[in-house]
Each structure stands twice: as C-alpha cells, then as structure tokens.
Image (tube, rainbow, N blue to C red; front, side, top):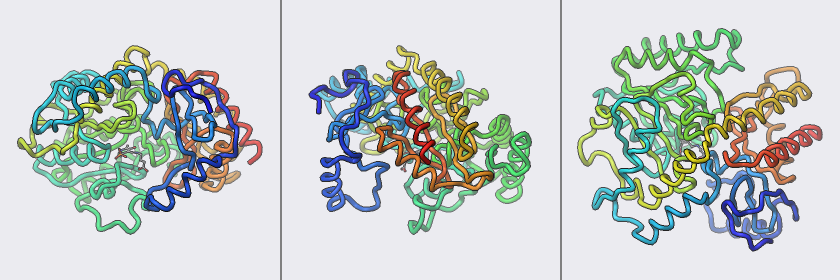
Length: 449
Ligand code: PLZ
C-alpha cells in the first residue's frame, strides 16, 4: 500500500495486487454484515482507502479505475483541490449554525451561483437541502403551493428517491419500493419516449410517446389538477434512457400551456455530466424548477431546488427548510466544485469523454450482439445488454460483465428497470489513458462472456 494521500495527488495507475475483494476488504465486510442493516447494499464490497482523479484505492492496496464516481457525484474528482481547500477553511471557522437560526454567506453564494449556471435568464431563487430525494420532495411542495393543485405526473422508468413521496414518484418496484408502501397519493405515471424499446420504432417514438403521455394526463388526471410534471432529462436509474429528441419540448410546452410547473430532475444528469452544465440545455429546455444534488458539491451532501423566483417564493416563510439543509461545509465544497468545473471546463471534458467512449462502445456493439444499444452523452454513457438476436433484457450477462470488470480493477455500475444496463460515469477529470484502459478491460470481459 502506498503512503500517498488521495485527491489529485493519488497516482493515476490501475493496480490489482489481491483478489477483489481482497482479504482486508473481506474482513471489513464480515464486520459490516454484523453491524450494518442488510437493506443497505453495495455494488462491490471493496472498502475504500483513498480516491482521486480516475482512481479508487482500496484497503488492500488495489487501485481500481473508477467508472462510477460514487453514482455521478465526484465529477470534479475525489477530494478535488478547491473542494478540500474551501471545505477545510469552513470546517475551521464553523461547522453549523443552522441557516434557519443564523444565516451565513456560503449558502447565499451557492444560490447566486445556481442562478447563474442553471438554464434561463429569468429571475431565479434557490433553496438548499441534504439529498436528492429531499430536493425532489421540496420541488413538489413548492409547485403545489404555487399552483394550489395536487397531482404530480412522472414517467415510466423514472427515479426520484427513496423517501415516501419519492418512492411513489419512482417507477421500479424492486429494490426501491417492494414492501415499503403505502405510497403517497396523487402521483400519476405516463409513458416516456424510450427509443430502443418503442414498439413502432425509434423514429415515431418522440411524437407518439408525447401524444400518449399528454392524452393520459388530460383524460385520466385533468391538466387543471396537475401541480407538477417531474422528469429526468436523461433517465438515470431507469437505464440511461435519453428520451427521443422532440419529446421533452412537447411535454414542456404542454406544461406551460396548462399552468403546470415543469420540473427537471437533473440530480444525476446535471453539473457538466452530459457535456453541458445541464442536460435539458441540449434541447433548449428552460425548466420552471430544476433539482440538483450529486455533482454539485464534490462528494459532500448538498441538494438544491432552483427556479423561477415567483414559483420559489410561493411557499410561506418557514414552510421550507431542515436542520442541516445547506450546511456551511457542504456549501463551501459546492463553491469549490463549481469553481473547478468552470476553471477546468469540465463540460468540455465530459464531451471529450463521450467522444472517446461512444465510438469504441459502438465498435464493440458491432462485434458482440449481446450489446443491443449504446446510448448517452458526455460522461453519462451506457450499454444495454440483450439476449442474442432479440431485445429481451439480459440481466445475467450484465451482472457477469460487471463482475468480470470488477475483478480486473474496473469499477462499473449496473442500472435499468430490467437490470440489463451497464453504465459509465467516470469522474470528468479522468485521464484519457485510464479511460481507454477501462474500455480495454470491458472489451476483454466481453470476449470471455
Ligand atoms: N433523482 C435523478 O438519480 C439518486 C440512487 C442510488 P439521493 N440516484 C442514485 C440508490 O440506489 O439509492 C437520484 C437520482 C435522481 C433523485 C435521486 C435521489 O437522490 O441523493 O440519493 O436522495
């Protein structure tokens, strides 16, 4: 094991020196099994020691190539210099006052930055929270206050969190909802434009899905009853589904025409991940509200709802908040992360990652018919695995492929409603050599499948 610290100074080299997981990880895993609730899972029981750039080093001295970023969180890398510098200074000054008790500048500064970086040049305000789910819940509270309506519309394959309301908004039963009901009422799910699986073909997908979604909302819910339409511009846990081009604008227009608050959940797709600051920019969408988390603060827990000032101000004073929401250390980290994204132009880095990954993955698709689809943009890319000669989901091959990558020191994550999508979310600061090495490992794992 090296004595090198994590963060930007961690050597950017893959190294596999034990079985994965190694003996120390296995020891910790045994302690974990005895002490940690079984309901909390892990993709790979390899215990982390240090991380930085595109590398995650474990307690056995293995250095894994990181294609996960802790689920799209450490986009600026782990322990990024500006994040550590600003958060450390804040730790020394004060750790908590509670913004609802005695406010501090960092919170205000994060809200000012959010107004600048999110789509649209209208007057904006923000409120800060701890987790993505909490941000989505609050977006719904705000939309209901503003519209004085109750219904919330979400989409097939959508994911919005694990709290009671966000479980209701989430579409997949296992593992997120099973046995955890009853769920919050007034939630309605409609079709999303999933090009690869649209029955009449991808070219008809956007218009047909939009028409069907709008028809269901109008006929089954009543547009006048809908407070908010909540959608991920790229659906993350549902399988990195990019709604067919033209779908999102039609839904956004329907919302606008009917006084419905259009909420873009950019918790996974936001903060440079897809090659823009926010994924909805690719179709020129300006959401009324946008929820962010994950990439916002370089690994510290922070989330936000940002949106049109008049909507954000609809909730009465004291109606929004929480003890820790917008914690000063997390705010300092967010300012460091945003500074890093700007200075290192991580939106362009994400686009470059997509340019390296997509052609290589498409070449693999030509060779291996287990790959049914290659999709995504920027550094949010995935392959969907199917049974030979069909579109039948192949979760077994997906799990086997992930396992083969893990044992070679490449950390990849699976996703998707059918568990048959392998997703790639490298830190945006990953070096191109590591990126290519990761793809080499994937390719040789495909060969042995
Ligand atoms: N909205 C679009 O992607 C979190 C979930 C991992 P929290 N996605 C990762 C898991 O299995 O719990 C997510 C998201 C979108 C909301 C959330 C919820 O964000 O910070 O996990 O609450």
